[in-house]
Image (cartoon, rainbow over all chains, first blue to last red):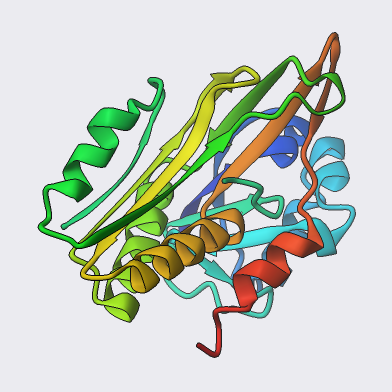
Length: 90
Length: 147
């Protein structure tokens, strides 16, 4: 029986959004993409814009279902994953 | 009472303070962040992560209220385009005495700098650049970790 890869909504902000050229996209996650870091590796192959946005992993922050996580965090059953630069509010 | 939200409209100080002053507190401390005219900045645009931002502001407010037994706390953060002299963020904390009100206010603004999903973009004439995070802001936020 064929299984359907889980679909997750990706959100991008600030210069990550600008480099990719869009703020949101739906992606079907392959089974081996099971951590935030693996997700970034996989997304980086999607386009030149993605590769540029994700070139320096130390400048990226990740939120899974609106909770900030470390790169080794498991994706689990995430519905919304955001990738963005370190925050600069206040 | 906790009020913590994002708005595009200018921050009305009288209105913002009235909420915390009505709490029956003996002391209200507040902080107002203003857009600086640094090196010829002509405009500052704040992008945020809708949904997560409000939750992050409320989490900071709740933590401050719990740590200092506050009677009220208000956090208001603007988004969109602002100009030098405009208010960008407002925090006010109400407590029985001045010390917890002042400490809670400092805590909240430090945590907002590094924990709430806002990104600043500065404009100088025709040049636009995203503001880089500052190590000093990280240090200010983590000084509360063991407290």
